[in-house]
Image 1 (spheres, one colour):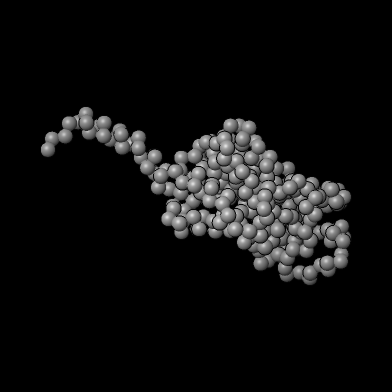
Image 2: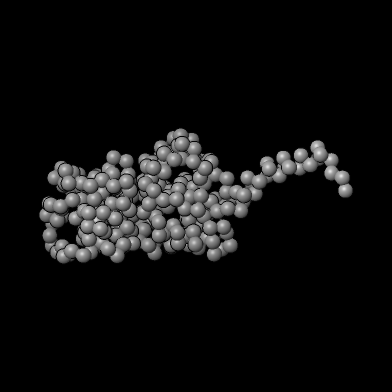
Length: 253
């Protein structure tokens, strides 16, 4: 059978135009998420895949770094920040789909020490606990966990004495790693991070009223091309999704 060359070229062009859409329909959504969500969001992605969907692709980093990626045009589908200011920044730039922003989960802050050292007695005041030694924090200049930690320690009257000994890390998991390997004597991380590590011990929970509420907002991005992005967003916010996060120690938003 003879194929007209013009018809052939039209067919090739049509197939090329449809290919990105077909690929987007087959792949799982790309999710940019705060570093502290690693275990819980992977569990949620596995649960979504068991329902017959393509498993979401997860990319973890500090919320500040992820927000900058979104602002630079990253082709992602969902963004989960560890605080509201970075989501506010993305929203002000007009980069999220209106009506898709919602608070996903909450968290608490704890002071941790290496599990290999002698535990601190519960009766020792926090000021005495942190009176010496290096203190690992996510960078308070930009990273949510560090901002919360600085706010709390300032409210408690401890920041000025601690600041010269602060070791700044690029995200909360990097701060946790410094304590795990003994490069810092203390760390201030999320309660869920301490729970995820077998190499640190939580010695104090910081008062919830000493820092802004810890909320993780979730939104779909306008750059989204995955047909499953909205479905996965709804799943994360559902009772089943929130039960997964609760299992890893997250609180209600």
